[in-house]
Length: 132
Image 1: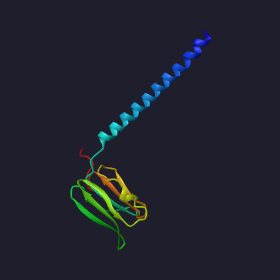
Image 2: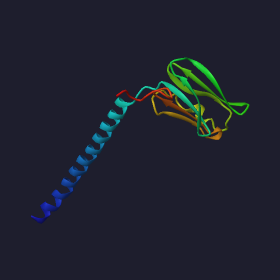
Image 3: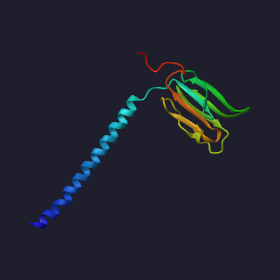
Image 4: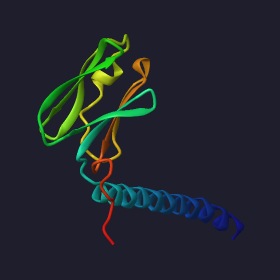
């Protein structure tokens, strides 16, 4: 009798482990779905140099924006098809150039050597976030 109980315990533990794994996977899937469905489309690409926002460009207008640090152009920001990406940079690692295009509010492209951040924002600087 004791032997039968010992054999049933590993099967029950395995079943419980599978149920726990299924629950975790379901929770992750629900979170990913909610996150994807609630993301806002970006309206502008904010250029932040040395911690200060220096410019904002509409994602609806196709344009190429040279970004300078002092008098030297260090990066080339391109806006096409509602997405922003870094086409060129003078930094050695080129991580910002290899980054995928961004278009959703909150997404960023960072160029650490030039202390440059391109952040996608939903509205203009002084526009209200909501109307009451």
